Length: 330
Length: 110
Image (cartoon, rainbow over all chains, first blue to last red; front, side, top):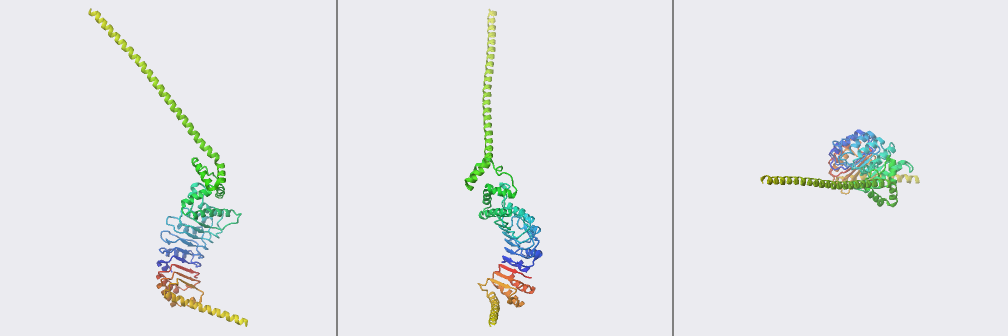
């Protein structure tokens, strides 16, 4: 079979479900498919535990669909999978890992790899009993991190479906699942990642009820308005009014009013005080210049008088000399 | 009487199924060799009689037909139909030369 897989130029879909490949066989298979154009590979129920992937050397570069459901993949196995989810060349769009041994640690490894991934749209983690609230919260933060507006904008905007076991309606898991679905729905409806990021900010950060719930689930406890430049607050409030209606605007105004006024007024007061002092400085400078001019005029006047006296003395001497000259000559 | 009638009916159905399987196998071989444009899928379940009765020469013949066929897109083989290494070698030789097979499903090979 390996020579066939190495030489096939047309095979796009290979389904090897229910074969006892085990980890060794699966890794051999991946190496055999290295240069093939295969896009879909299914190896469900094949006894796979660990995966060795060298993304540069031994991996089918065109693979977009990988079904590894009902195997024994745990956190160690996820290290290999992380290789094909990170990096600019990642192409996988669907990864089925339902019914494996995925736990919270394994979820953390996958989430870390998916942080900057822009290809994976579907991730199936159903029937992995090791995933607790903690793992689900990590997944929620992956698609909508509300710790800051920047974090929301930098969340994963590519994943459109994350399948995890839903809890009971009263179960906290159910709320996490609902919020994951909300974020992935936005990803699905907004094909542009930037638009999806903005929509998440509007739907969660700028909606008091949603934000409170997400903050509680993600352990975030600081105010949103401390992040926003006070000068942008009026625009943000207008956006909230447009997006969520007057009721929500009223709620947000109530909570941000003090901040809005105190911050904006303090700034205005400082500006006014500064203007007042600047005017005073200008006034004093003008007064000083006026006084300087007066002083200069006075000094000039004194100087002028002194010159006149000197001239008068000199002319008296000359007259006396002339008179004495006249008298002596006679 | 009724019991006999039921039994003969079962036999008739069984025989009919056998014939159907045999015809299916013949049809498959003919379609593959004649490059039938409507035969785009080849399916073989290991438990079926026609698969079990295939000789190595039959597999080689099928592989040869597959290698020259340009319409066959899907090969679906399951339940140990290709457990024998010789069969696998003959058949995959044909698959390797195929220019049309894009989808291959090999379930439950023991």
